[in-house]
Image 1 (cartoon, rainbow, N blue to C red):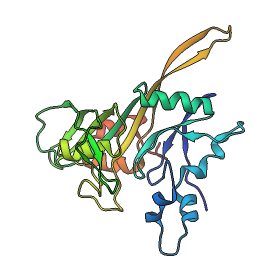
Image 2: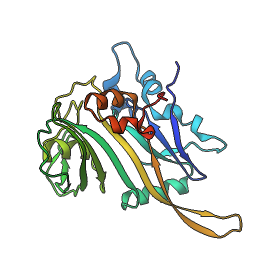
Image 3: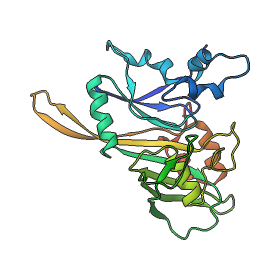
Image 4: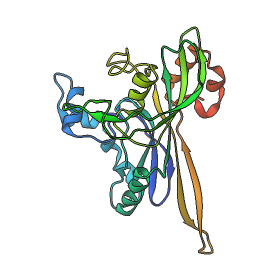
Length: 259
């Protein structure tokens, strides 16, 4: 089996950031992969086909231990995924993620956008889990999402939105976009009008965080790091359909394999 290429966006002695492929499990368990099995396929085969775990040996480089994903991205969400290269890094940056010291920016293509009355805002609707584990608006678990409309096409009623989350609830952006903004992510089979096989147009565009390094003289200094992930190739066609040509023309936004 030939594995799709996994692009490494950032690497230092503690961290890796990769550009997760849509259709890859970032944290897999047998309960997570069972629904993606075909009738003649075992769970082990699905792990090989779909899981980030199939790439960890390649991402080890010269270290003795495998890197560990520090957060999760939904199966069909692409973009920046951070991995810790050591147990110390995993502890330190898991804490940074939990305490909002890492800025997580997502892009989403949304539907049903007729008119733009507000270009940006903040959603603070709490998110709870039902007994079956499905998220819904309610409960006492805080969920904080900043949003901004970057582009709007009135003909297709499509918008390109930026989302910055300060909490990490399950399906937070998808649920806030669909239920609070009434602008579901295109291709969302759970909260929108998409089908299970559709592309989900939600992309983890960037991660921004602090790192501390030592200069050649041994002096410690702080560096603000921002890692950006190019969008998948499916986005290019969709954005051209929506007349978002200026975004496509920006080289940093082109998809995998595009020059």
